[in-house]
Length: 252
Image 1 (cartoon, rainbow, N blue to C red):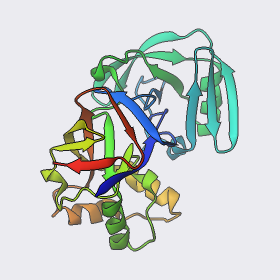
Image 2: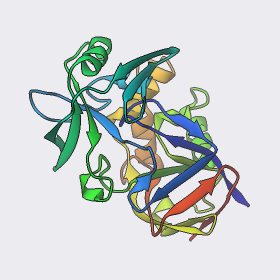
Image 3: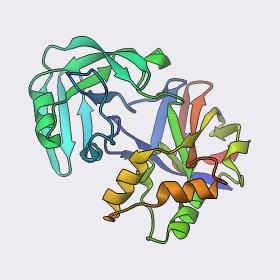
Image 4: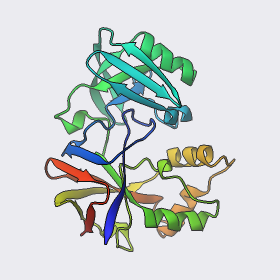
């Protein structure tokens, strides 16, 4: 029997993960996941880990009146200033966002040592206006991660290198390309894409395991018969959902 082992959401796109015991969500994703991003005020393009690996240190809490920036053990609270609406480029899409110019963006810019502006998703009902491209939920299996760790031979690979939302014990499929649906707690999630990994994985691998060079993309490509550095799946739920740690996972 395969089970849910970890549930992780990322309030800031490319930011630190927050572990939970329960997730609520809908076809547009997990409640509270990837609500915020950072973008360059000059180019209007969002900032990714490939631009600055220190993004992975940051998480965000917010309510109607304030935004809290958490970096390690330090939490700084900022009153919400007047927000403005802007349009930024997220990969190939134009996305409308609420921007937080002023002291909170200045604080993050100071930590990253680059000029950035904090933005939040404006529309929670239109998936095309989200910060995710091919699927709002990312899932990996612990068995696959353990196998990859053995192939690389540099010790246990941290889950956060792949930035998943859901970690399950095992998919039970030899080839992830064959998986079409995943059912958790009777909720159906359709596979939208087998995830082909990018340089962000190598960047985090070097950072989190303190190594000078990462073979991870080359090894993933080799394990996939040189069909790309694929690892994990993107999912989209058919309905509103509620899932928990230890829920049974059925793979189809």
